[in-house]
Length: 93
Image (cartoon, rainbow, N blue to C red; front, top):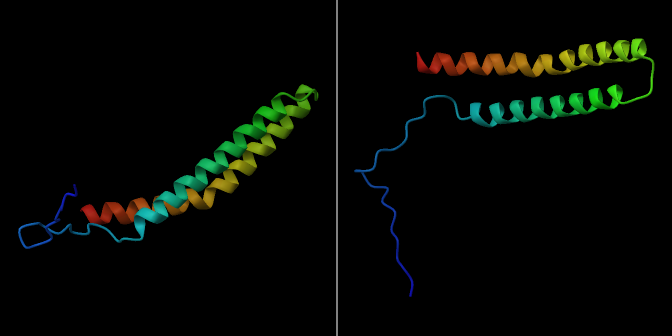
């Protein structure tokens, strides 16, 4: 037995209004995924360094350099994320 389901797209069904540009959601998803990937790699690197038999002073130097590199790597993504947020805020005001 088959059911015949009909979806109404007639005048009594309101069409969704775009509140912000359609490119925002895919870009937002991309940026958040990229930042998550960067953070996961960073955390793994930190754990690797912490678990090495190197001298503690040397580990601290490496960790400091790793954190600087992490901030630099994230910077452009965060800036673009802030720009997207501003575009979204503008659409709602």
